Length: 274
Ligand code: 9MG
Image 1 (cartoon, rainbow, N blue to C red):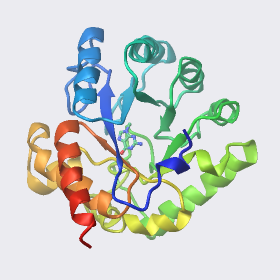
Image 2 (image 1 turned 90 degrees about the vertical axis):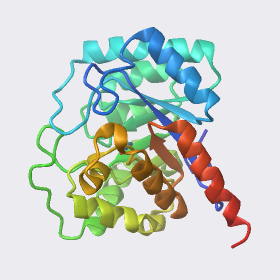
Image 3 (image 1 turned 60 degrees about the vertical axis):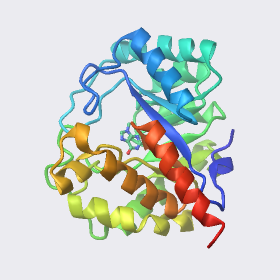
Image 4 (image 1 turned 45 degrees about the vertical axis):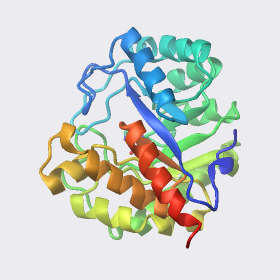
C-alpha cells in the first residue's frame, strides 16, 4: 500500500480505529489495556467497518508522562502479532521510538503513525530502510507542556511550512513522497480557536498533494466547546469527522467506528447529486 493510494477524488475516507493499550489512555480510561479485551475490540471494529487499526502503547494526551521503550514494546508487539495472525486488517503503529518502529515493521505493521514526525533519534533511518507509509503529525511542544501557551504567526502557514521541511528531510534520507501522510495534529499544542481554524481550513493542505489524516475524536476541542465529558462527545466527534471528510481528508482517526462509518456513508450518498 502506498500513502498516495489513500487519496481519492470522491468522499470515501478510510476509517482508522483507535486501540490504545496504555493504562491511562485519555478517553477510554485504559479499558482495553488487557490483551483479550484488545482483541475483542479489534474484532468489533472490523465488524463495524474499520479500515485500519491504530495501536498506541504511549499516551500522548496533554500532561502524559513518558513510557519506557521496554514497556511500549511489550504492550504493542505481541498485540500486533496476534492481530496479524487472526485478522485480515491493516494495522498502524502509533509510536515515536525507532526500536518500536523497526520491530513493528518486522512484524507486519502497515503504517507508522508518528506524532513527532520522525524527529526522534533513529526514526528516519528505520523508515528509510522500509517501504511502508508513514504519517507525519504536527505538534508544537511536547505532550507534557504543549497546551501551556501555543503560539503561531499563522496556524495554517506555520504548519504547512513544518510539513514542507519534514517532507524534504524524509526525501533526503530516501523516504519517497508517495509514502507520506500528513496530519495537522488537532489538540497537540493548539488553542481551541486554532483547532477550529485548522478544521475549517483543512482544504488548504491540499496544495501539498498528500493524503491527510484528521484526528479529532473525543478531544478537548470538542469537550471544551460543548462542555461535555469524554463519554458525551459523540455528536461533536461525528460532526468534525464529516467536516474533515468534506475537505477530502483521506483517513479519519476515531474511537467510535460504527457511528463514523454510518455518518460517512450518508455523506458519501449525497455526493452523486452535487
Ligand atoms: C496518537 N494520536 C493521538 N491523536 C492523534 C492525531 O490527531 N493524529 C495522529 N496521527 N495520531 C494521533
